[in-house]
Image 1 (cartoon, helix red, strand yellow):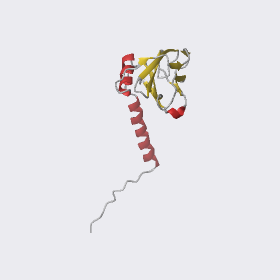
Image 2 (cartoon, rainbow, N blue to C red):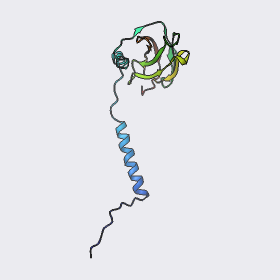
Image 3 (cartoon, one colour):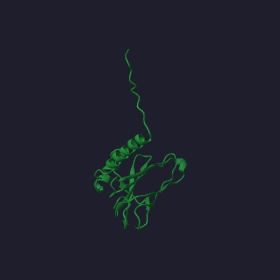
Image 4 (cartoon, rainbow, N blue to C red):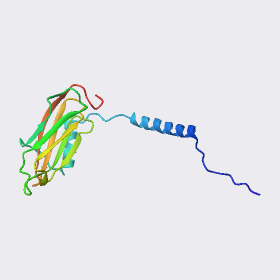
Length: 161
């Protein structure tokens, strides 16, 4: 007569809490890895070039960036980008990209637009590590890419600074 041994795992409350605690320690350790250094304007330009398919944006006064000149708290900086465009089927803004030249990750957000939007405008709040330029890049329906830039002085950084 042979005896079969049960291979099922019985997990009690202490075992479960121990497993969860171990997983939390592993996750915390992963968060302690070295952070990337702040991006340089060249990194932001490279990211923007990849995003626009290698097309270089041309500085254009039609791209307006509304930001406070001084952000006392970099955790939440309001930004509004407006592009002067008729927003017709033949001539409209297709995308607006917002880039922060000195953040660890320079690409902040992308807005996709259609003529149905009626106005080429997008607003959000961004997080900024330090004083830096914010660049707005607009892709137009004719394939051209235009941009605008504005500096913001940050007194208390929002990205760990």
